[in-house]
Each structure stands twice: as structure tokens, then as C-alpha cells.
Image 1: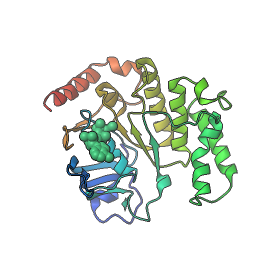
Image 2: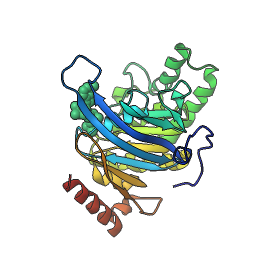
Image 3: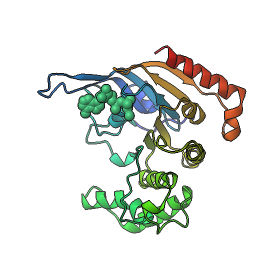
Length: 280
Ligand SMILES: Nc1ncnc2c1ncn2[C@@H]1O[C@H](COP(=O)(O)OP(=O)(O)O)[C@@H](O)[C@H]1O
Ligand SMILES: [Mg+2]
């Protein structure tokens, strides 16, 4: 964890000044405004502050509102009550800069007819065509080269997505999320469909990238070991409507390595987290 402040002068209270991402008394009820008879309470009274530079994972049973939480932070979904702020600015407000946030979902979003390099530049092209960003492409082309080497895709720039393994495809997705150099990465079970070995490899890669780029990461997973391995803090959501019922500080030394998983402390923390889960 870093002690840096966000540098924002727009926060209205101490908590929002210190945290980069903050959920303030957030509820999400689906279908309340529609004609549908049944509404679904997905999240209830979620309060969560994530400091700049922190790596926080959210775990919870299937359907408890994890993706909903992440989509609200991304500004894709509106909260029913409460606010979500990034850098002290409500994500639903006009002042919020979408480029501050990079998104990674479980399934790769690369287009099969474009090479790795062209896929990586896709988000830039889209925003440029929408008139949401200006400036020359050269800056982003240079950045694309840096990202290709950052995530270990050298030699694959001209490959097409279907020539790559699932793990390599998720590396491409990661570069797309990083192209604007956002301060926040929001990741929704990004390695959920990978085999255990590839997942382990990408866990290490992600920690290296996080360390090198000093991002703030909100990571969703249902894999408790993965949450412990990666995080500074793990937040546990109850079954729907998701409420934060527990929070565990992960005091494992960094940098972490494959050996970390064999340490006594790792086993203790993972066991503790499992017990929290059993009580749900
Ligand atoms: N657009 C929607 N309309 C109605 N209900 C939804 C919608 N999206 C998700 N839900 C419901 O909200 C709950 C939380 O969903 P989600 O956030 O996807 O859970 P998780 O990611 O933890 O599995 C689930 O019960 C789901 O069925
Ligand atoms: Mg989900």
C-alpha cells in the first residue's frame, strides 16, 4: 500500500481524498424502473475505499453482485442509491474521464481479423472516431510497442488472435486495457477460463506489471487462492443482495513468487478465507 494521496482537490470528505476508488453506500436494484414485475436487489449498502496503488480482490458466491460492482466502477451501470467515485469524481458525472479506467473481462475481446498490434490499437481508433480523443496516433503506436514488450507479446505482433493460446489472448486484452495508461484497472475474473498452470503464470505476470506500472487494481474472482496470492486486501461479499461481510488484509511479503503459495502464512490466510466463505 502506498501513502500517496490522490492529488485530487475535489473530494468532499477525508475518505474520498485518500482513496482512488470509493463506493459510498451503494445499492443496486435491477428492474426497479422498468415495467417488469420483479426487481432484483443485487447489492446493498456497499462501502469500499481503495487506495491508490492498492490491489484489492472481491470474492463472493456466484450471482452475489461482483460483476455489478465492477460495472458500476467502470461507469457502465448506474447505482440505484449511493455514489461511486474515482479520484473524488463521481463516475456518472461529466467530469469523469473514461480513460482513467481500463477494463479486463473474462473473455478476450480481440477481433479475429485484426493482428495483435491492430487489436491493441482498437480502443484508440474507436474513441478517435467518436471524437472523444484527439492527437496523433504516433504516440499510441509507440505506446503499443512498449505494451507489447511489457506483457511479453514480442514476436506475436503480427499474429491473429486465433493463432494464440487463451493465455496469450488475455495478454492482448490486458494491453487494450492499458493503452491509455489508466490509473485504475478493473478486472472481472480475467483468468477464469484458463487452465491452472496458465492462470498461475498470468498471476505472476499481472503482479509484475502492477508493480512496474503502479496501477490500482480492483480484481474480481471466485478463486480464493488467487485472491490471496494477488491481493493486499480481500473483500468478501454475501450472497445476493451482496453486502460486504468480511475483509482480510493479506500481509504476505512482496514480491510474491510461486514459492509464496507454499508458505505457512499463505495456507493460513487461504484457510481463513475459506472459513469466512463457509459461514455465508
Ligand atoms: N441486467 C440485469 N437485470 C436483472 N438482473 C440482473 C442483471 N444483471 C445481473 N442481474 C442479477 O443480479 C445478480 C448479480 O449479478 P452479477 O453481478 O452478475 O453477479 P456475479 O458477478 O457475482 O456472479 C444476479 O442475481 C443476476 O442474475
Ligand atoms: Mg460475474
